[in-house]
Length: 450
Length: 159
Image (tube, rainbow over all chains, first blue to last red):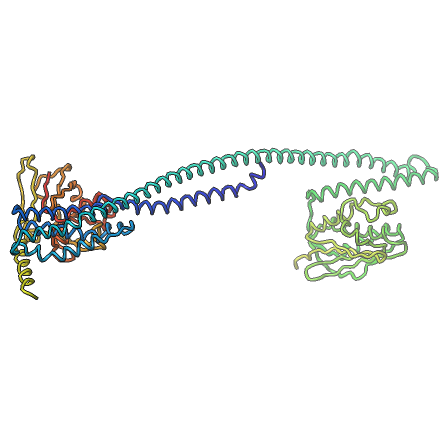
């Protein structure tokens, strides 16, 4: 059934071609029938019969003349009438039609020749000395044509009948074609309705399907937002309490904490902090990807932002024994951006760089401008990212080399967040990396209009 | 030119002039209607009537031909004519055809006295030939109207 739907245009093309063919054939038929319609009561049969009839009448007139029952004028008139009929046989529509019958028409020419031959005798009838003899000889001459005229007349009649027969069979063909056209149109309509029905059935099913999918998607979205709010309230709130409690204990507010316990409390505190970061990251990713983050675009100097962020990340870097160096930072680079989010991007990249750098190494931060863009470069000298992993770096929850995740803490969400923010600013994030040589991340942001 | 031919041509000249003066067409009312009116026309009389020129084709000529003569409408003018009136046209050999009066009221049907400006002999289907304006009215180009093109016309009766 689906295949039928797919190839329906073929059906229509075939049906249309068929109908077109039938119409063309009908057109051709019409011409033939029109031609056949010329066969009229005044056609060649009638004309030929006229010749025969007037010939007999002239013979009759000549006989009457011989018997003294007619005069020369009557004979002349009859002669003229026969003359006009023979002439007519070779003129107009009759001549045209009879030529299509393939008949020997010699007899008319011979008769005309005879008329010309005897014309002087007819015209001079009253003056002829032996009138009776003369008219009788003329009679004999004309009577010679009787048989052949009859034969020719009959052949013309036959030809005409054949033509009419052809006309009749053409009519039958037209009827058949008409029937075919009717059936063709009927089938086409039936097919059209069938396909229309199938189509509407199909589209109903499809719309029901898409409706269901839409509902599923809505349900999923609702579930997701519910999950997020659960994360927010049911995880973060108690976590804050835990962290608060731990801070209080660590501050000896509940009495002096023995050193042994202090170490355990430190572990608890750090892990609570990690959880906190994870939850914040997750909430951030959700907000960024759903586009519900509102950016507060202001014009500011990107270089000062870099210096501030380097400073605030410095203590974090110390944990890994890494030093952040501001190298080649171009001053006064104005951008139109959300300051806090930009700061999030920079600290994210800096902390990543520190995390994956070897102890004692340096992370370099640079800022330059090209035609319309400010380019931040953050370069570490860590282990680098293998080529095979390049494509997945910005994927969520992805961390290069699964073993790293244990070694180096992180959610695997950072770069995904960075990418979302930068793209929302109309910028791009990219990186260059080689295993063993370190990695450089580039953030390109459009410069603020002067 | 020998003597015989000269005699023949003189004969025709005499014959021609007599034809000109003698009756060539009779238009008669119906005896039943108590209208025993009958008008006889010589060739001269017909020529004196308003002449209409038609260039037309029909089944009996090979191509477009020019005919001229008085309108049949004018010839039957003096007669009582209703919608049912039929004209019966008779030829020299007694061939008869009926023509509804509507034909002559609607179309300029003429009694042609000339073909291409020349009078027509009996041998040329003359001297009088009913001609319809067929080229200008294609609906007339069928056998029904062709059969009404009476040649060698001698008599019209209005019934």
